[in-house]
Image (cartoon, rainbow, N blue to C red):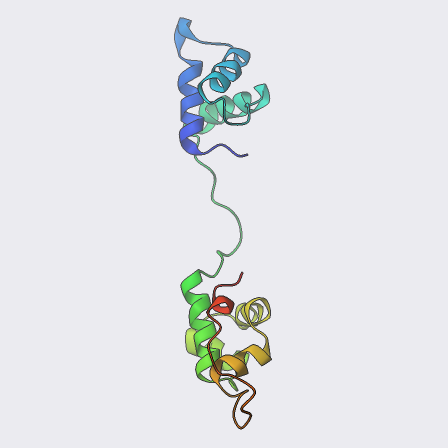
Length: 143
């Protein structure tokens, strides 16, 4: 389990300064005593945290590369757009919401099938009394 920033700062404080410094093994043991419910940290983890602080002056995570994920609100907007107009294309939704076509396509593939769009929008049940148009709320929240 990765350590959060608070844990890394706590490890730095356990190391200490000047003549009150602890060894990395002592820090590992102390961290485990203070947090017995968590996985113990290794000596190499303490070493990396200490080195990162010496080199950078902080222990924050570096920003990750790549484009950020599409947030849940935008994903819901894509789904609602498809439900409002079940015959819309990926290109139309992409243009309307100002997000990439591949993002819209991935959301459709991951969260919806063409049939579920028709069912949720009511287009699937028109003219057939055996089919119901009740919304599938669970489908909207499926990952």
